[in-house]
Image (cartoon, rainbow, N blue to C red; front, side):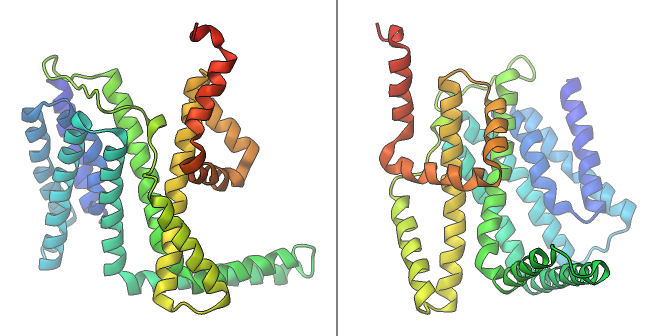
Length: 332
């Protein structure tokens, strides 16, 4: 019982803190781990207690900061509170029934839809803040260049400034895609941590256990093959747009789609790398560190390329054949 009391106290304090600091919107990221694990272990009484603990935490944060109870604030708080309850219950239930891919898709979809909705709601303010931040950065670079005078870094600064201006001008072309990438990476971290925790401690009270024979492994996570047709169509539109004008909206959609697909195929490439590490009995963390150290900034595009061409070449089967050739005694 001490474990659930610790969780209740933690949720009350973190909810009060997030409410008081004006970042209550982050609550689902906390509850998906704290409440989601209990739900996955099928302990519904404890899940109910944890969900109820959010209410006094929210009230405490409002009272201590004397926050105004406006209609807009109440709607936002209510929506976030419901999300903080429904998301962990959905994820916890999914972890009992579904595969790695479906659970990851669930969390990514929730984060991406929420982030996109907030972006659309605060679009003008966000757009203005981006422009102000980029122009302030450009001014700092120009001022630094004047103080240093003419140097070998002048051309580098000029190229960097041009890159910042391009980012400012074409921000809409990539922002939604980058939001998806951020959501996917966040979901991957949450999923990895939750599954590792459930495997180490599958029960909280000695009665309710977690088990899911359908879960599988992250090394088997891969996108559907038909998604490659969307990637090919997007590439055709982007190539055509370099020579002809396809229109602003189609350009925004195609570029953001390209960014989204690059993250999807990067995930597949990461899954292939994980499969390779597991197959050859390498340390997964050390393998990732070495690959990142060797490839550097090229890690993302190279993994994305492997993930893309896996549609035809099926690298996992190739790695399995290679392993069988190197270890013929296994098949004998």
